[in-house]
Structures are given as C-alpha cells and as structure tokens.
Image (tube, rainbow, N blue to C red; front, top):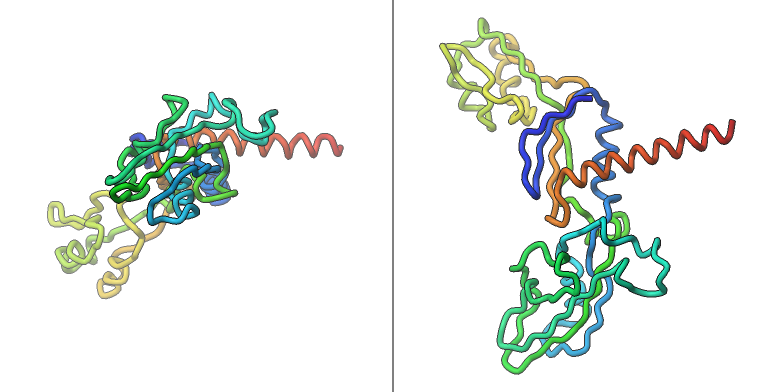
Length: 265
C-alpha cells in the first residue's frame, strides 16, 4: 500500500491511497466516522436559566460544541471505575453570565486548561437585560455510533482515481472540450487537448459524451486499486490522528478475528 499526502492542515487532509480495494478503503472511512472517540458535553446541570430558550434546547446546543480532545489524559466512561464522573473520564465546564449579551463558547470555563471549545465564537444563547444563565456542563468521551456529537469527522469520503484517455487525432474542436469541462481539467497545450490535473476530475463524463461526435475520442475511467481520500474534522482531533487511530482499530479487529479462529482450532 502506498499513500501520498496532497493537502494537510489541522482540520482537513487529502491523500491518494494505492494498492488497496473497495472493502479496505470503505472500512477505514466507516471507522473514521463512528468509532473514533472524542469529547462532547453529555450532562448539563442548569441552576438558573432566564433566557427565552428551553433548558433542553440549551443543553442540546452545548452538546454540539466541538471540544479539543486529549485521548492520552482521558478514558471512556465505560472503562472508568468511578460511579459517576471523575477527572479521569470527564471534564467540567462552568457557565455563569448575565445579560444583555450573547453568550459564546469562549464563556465556558473548563477545569482543565488544555480542554476547551475548538472555536471561541459559537453562539450559545442571547440574554436580555436582567436575564442570567448559570450551569455546569460535563464532557466525556463517546463514539459517533452513539450520537453524532461524538463524530470526529464532518466529512469523510473517497473516490476512484480518475483516468482520462484522449485521442487527439480524432478531436475536431479543442476549445469546445475545454469550455465544457466543469472542473477545468482539460486544457489546450501546443494545439493538443491535455489533462491539466486529473485528480480534479469528478468522472462526470461530460467530455466523453461530447466526444461521441468525434468517434469516442475521449474515454473516462478509473484506476483499479487507487483512491483519493478526503477527511475533514470538527477540530477536536487532527485528520491524521483520526486516520492513524482508524488504522489501529482495524488492525485490532483483524487480530481479534485471527485469535478467535486460532482458539477454535
């Protein structure tokens, strides 16, 4: 298997994977979506809420705020020995504000300086003159398979690596092909039609259909066993962290199957 990174930052990564099949790449995608633990607010103790927002709605909005996740310092609640919440499996946020103002995610005060909302500017609630809100929000690790608020990825998908074959001897109007391509993949170079960046191709086959008048001068296909994989996170974890964990989880699953088969024998 060969991997080449095309783009990478703290929230997005694009890379090309070669030497695998549909089953493998789709398994990695599904694990990235629902089996990577992240921190999210699960329990909210509301002591005072004068805002024109129901307690349930307020708690729901808090639960959807992405939180920076440290998987080295915290464990899943199911793996913790405590009866409720403790410093090993949860983080507490305090919120106490008085209007008039808009309360933002930056107003949540964490008992762990390293754990905080990913973005400071997420609006939570609007307080009018004299209105107050006071609450404690408790965040814990969870999986996207339990609730979408624990999904580390906002986008995670792949496509087949495009392959475009051009027979320039049959092409009659190069400019027409260039204009019709919706992704600007086809360009004119030295009086020939060439592919500028094949990875931008969406395999819509507009050019292929157009080439029917030129004796099928263009054929759009894909390379077997080669994919373009894109992953975006909500900022709680970096994309390569999510991908690395997904590979580890898949490897562990495979080992469990092998061990089970060996025990049966």
